[in-house]
Image (cartoon, rainbow, N blue to C red; front, side):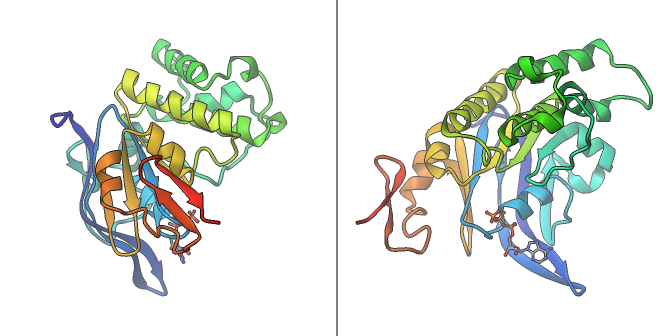
Length: 262
Ligand SMILES: Nc1ncnc2c1ncn2[C@@H]1O[C@H](COP(=O)(O)OP(=O)(O)OP(=O)(O)O)[C@@H](O)[C@H]1O
């Protein structure tokens, strides 16, 4: 496993935003090394910087300092179009274009691979079909997206990212509209996808219990540091003790879950 190729790497990365011309850092010294074929969960309390990190890794925000490498090449050496062939992203805010079918929306995922006005090729159709298969959307593919529930729509956006067929997939809270069964099912689908298609999949998530049971690795963002590793290793570092800064919520390392102290 140690020799697994690394798809995404950061060195002393600082992330944040610009405010009145000044750089405001949210997190500094982030060192990540995300391997191929693995599902990695990004965990941290509200407002700690998960979305900012995902947007930075996706090339939407410029790092405040440090280095970011996609497939061993600095992100600075990629054009926006090239990044879209390496990284697909599912964010929480979704632009909804009315009058699109589920199939049409998934098909948009193929855009980075198509020359202007070209018809879908065999490869494009193969990836759209794979995305429909992974996200179990066969019965919905002809429906108008305006008729879907939030949870169904969420699956369609994930399918669009899968259709894009990039080595790296980043998802911001992809399970937030899903019931427990669909949350578990999403984790299993993403893990299967990571394994079968050798993808690096990073998702942010507030379902920490599920993440600890179903991910290959986790990244935990805390106030002054971040850590990445296999579940057991990270749990042993006690990063979940007093995680929520609330004495009534306690973490049980044996059961890998939080409980409410009576
Ligand atoms: N453009 C911006 N202007 C001002 N503040 C910002 C901006 N972008 C992010 N922040 C602040 O940076 C911090 C991190 O935000 P971010 O959305 O990355 O957190 P998060 O971990 O994804 O949170 P959540 O779990 O609530 O979604 C927050 O305090 C947020 O208010």
